[in-house]
Image (cartoon, rainbow, N blue to C red; front, side, top):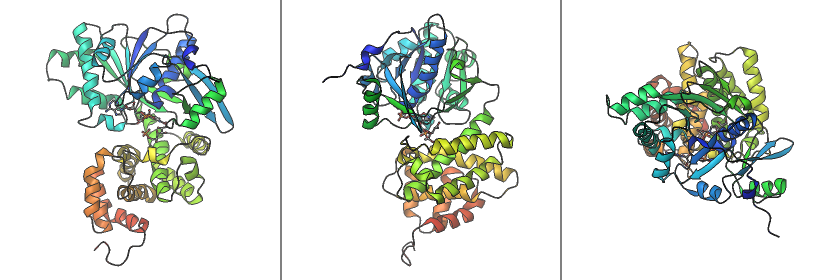
Length: 436
Ligand SMILES: NC(=O)c1ccc[n+]([C@@H]2O[C@H](COP(=O)([O-])OP(=O)(O)OC[C@H]3O[C@@H](n4cnc5c(N)ncnc54)[C@H](O)[C@@H]3O)[C@@H](O)[C@H]2O)c1
Ligand SMILES: O=P(O)(O)OC[C@@H](O)[C@@H](O)[C@H](O)[C@H](O)CO
């Protein structure tokens, strides 16, 4: 029997007032969900999102076929609850440059959100050029200021995208002056564990709602969003979903990157080496759980929060990571380590050194496990090509340590010896002379 499609579930389509770049699972579990909550809480017209894919047009094609509505499954340790999200008013192939320019040149559009991955901010990535293309269209149309809100896991992410965009503009040009004066680059700390959607998730959506949905999203019940910056053309009332607006974002970013994301990276590299597949499997392993606690002890010392606040955050993380009903694949987290380990491990390591402490053994252990991962067959990290080649040529643990630090933190040469020790300890025993 054919089941009804979720396409017929839409009850309202709000006018497009938000543009989004990077139509992945996370955008749909996080910013679109907060926007949905804001729209539900408002009396008048809400804020509809025009969402553009980043690389492949597939997500737009699949969502367009179901009128851009989808099921959000909140998966707790004891069960699922499903809701329909209709905050996306339209979905577009990111290659449709005319549609992109048209949306950003519309004065009713006041916000541009981004989830383009950490790698999307690297020099040479197409994301800043596309943001600039949209801003140029807005400038030429005289459509007024706009807020660009980065939602990727990078510290001071608003400043990172601003600098990447301005680096592409002729200094002193009218466009340069307009961006500096009228465009607000908002930094945000985003948190909601959202794995890639699987076929089992599509079946779960059908079971829960009785409707066919080719693009549901499964996420944890927890969600957090902290933002800092101005919104010159207004914004959705995201606080209806619990978002907070603060003057200084840095402490929140550090708390999240140094505890949650760093913990994820540790579990990913150590867990994959141990033949494990998911975050929940990894934290169920006593040795890995102990290593995770060691890392948290090392990284918490430099956080600008009192002990009770950090204790609460860690208690929540233990239970979030242990939610075995969320299938968060270690391989997904392990990708792009060259972009992730700076903010997650090297920054807190630097903070430890700056306050006169020893480098953390678990911190170095993550770097050692990463170097081993890079020598394996399943590396997905375009930014690590040169390091992978250097590691292939490296003959000793010391050479490998030097290569890793040269790539991630070239000034920290004092760490070559202690990192080499961790690398040597983590390597499988090799026949005498194999590296010589
Ligand atoms: N999934 C999570 O739990 C989570 C939580 C917090 C933050 N985030 C942030 O969101 C990002 C995306 O996560 P996701 O789960 O949606 O991943 P995803 O793989 O589902 O989607 C990634 C999106 O980024 C786009 N993209 C990649 N490179 C791009 C580029 N150069 N230009 C434009 N778009 C580009 C892709 O096209 C895709 O739409 C993460 O990398 C992270 O920074 C994710
Ligand atoms: O999404 P990435 O690739 O930046 O990193 C993988 C995970 O650490 C990350 O997605 C977390 O699940 C997320 O940051 C939780 O809010």
